[in-house]
Each structure stands twice: as structure tokens, then as C-alpha cells.
Image 1 (tube, helix red, strand yellow):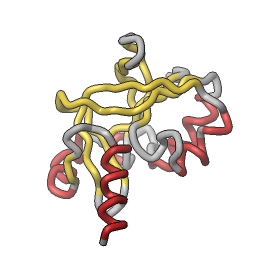
Image 2 (cartoon, helix red, strand yellow):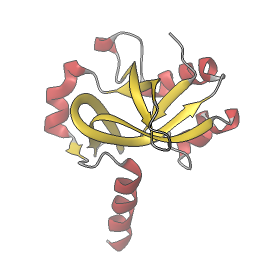
Image 3 (cartoon, rainbow, N blue to C red):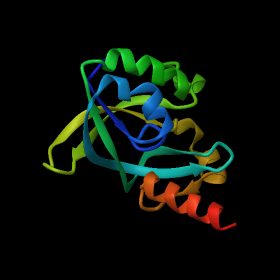
Length: 147
């Protein structure tokens, strides 16, 4: 099922490289948004992933564009989403997302860590308690610059 909505929280955020590569040219509407879940940083890979178990807040943005049927297959490829949970690095599901400005809750595509790999994630990932990748990345870069 295709919706015109995609919620992103990591490397696809506006201003980051994957946004520029895969989304920017389609000029989507961008809304600050949030959803529930738990965010982890994968230090060996350098990016965040989210599970939908947990009551934490995941901060991100919602892209809205009629071009989503063109955008999603490209993003599926970089997220290694095959449509089969056990064969995918990440899975794509439709989740409830709240728009910060209005409080409206909408359905959106979202890439998640597969439930079948939760034990591995808890062992190898680093929890980002506030679910804010942009803030975490800023802090991480500040620490690297001071080294």
C-alpha cells in the first residue's frame, strides 16, 4: 500500500546526504513530527534505527508528496527492504505519526528494525534516550572535533 506520507528520523532528515540524494528533488511538504518507539545508534554503521516497541518518543519529519511511489523503491533499496522480514535489513510499515504543529495523527510509511533482530540490537546498539537523531549527531560530531 502506498501512502503519500513518509516519516523519517535519521539519514533522510532534511540537510543530510540521503535527503539530498533521494528526496529533495521531489520538493515534498515537510512537517515536524513524532511517533512512539525506541531509537538505537549502530556505531559500526554510523546511523540510527528504530523499533516500534517502547513508549519513547522518536523525533523526525513527515514528508508528504504524490511522488512517494517513485521515492519509496529507491529508499527501499538503501534500507535493504525486500518485503520479507527475515530477508530485510529494515522493514517498512505504516505507523501513526503526530504532526507537532497541529497535533493531528496521520498514517505514514516508516522504516523499522525487524522484531526478529531485537536481541541483537539490544546487545550491539546504543540507546538514544530522547529519540532525537539530529541532536545526537550534533553531539557526536562535537565530540569528534574536540578529539
